[in-house]
Image 1 (cartoon, rainbow, N blue to C red):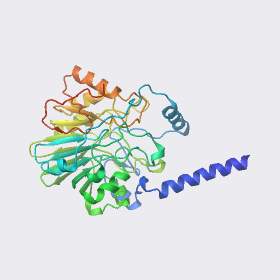
Image 2: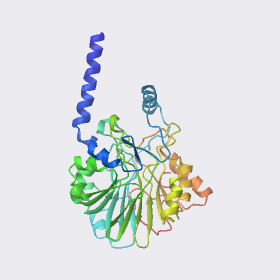
Image 3: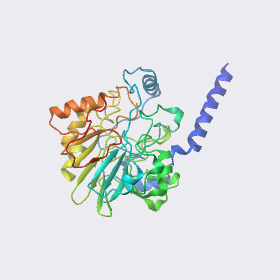
Image 4: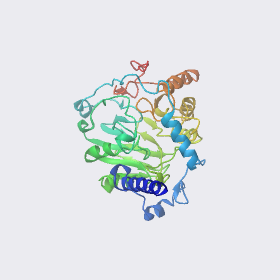
Length: 367
């Protein structure tokens, strides 16, 4: 029996190693040369990227097992919608020929199409059904359709990526997008995955926190977040995570990426605010990981810290990645935003809306 157990464990380890090393969705590996290059970053310490206020992401084997057991076996009331969420559809021509004020299309979770200054910009484009390295390793998204199929998207001027987790950086999406994208903007290290998937190096701009890049008549700023990174057990913290500031001559936009609540929101607000609009993480939280995801009440406070004129809660409405009900984020953030008098918008998935739009139809669509 002992010999059989050893053989079984050995076989499982071998399958895991083969899967991780040869399945493309895991992406690339940071080289020693890259680690030396990143050592000049204030965020890089002892071979890993770190947060401003350190977060301990090292779980013991027992803690990891306990977390996995709770996640996979805890029954969450209203954890998913009873029926697929119906999304608004938008066609390729309506995107390609758009020539009006700045507007957004939300794809659910944290994925957006931003149309600004006659440019098409995708933010954290995650268009697959499952936020995992393989379709069998996760639950499907809440909607069976997207506002538009990836193949039907017109040429994309820029893609902005916040970090390398599967619900933000998706292999299948990048594979379909890479030949129609002019530039990719990422935090330090994330380029290794894009390059592994066939994106040419000259199409990728990597930035450290507080670094700025000019894209024609726009400015992109890589700003701090409180989170972590990694696509497999062995590469945690090897790449940087970030939020982003997107500025035109007359408009100022913030995208939070994934982040726990911390002082960086006020710092970003003081340096780059006030913001006309902020897309703010609000979902996939739990008291077991309070440092890396905000609770809805913190989302509102972060919006105030940023000096945002209005916020939109994101990181919800598409995937079940935590133990709260699927509507808990939007219900709680709506109550807190009203209490603190911060305007909030909650458009339907796929419904195009203007940056300066004051009224959004069907604001309570999840009900």
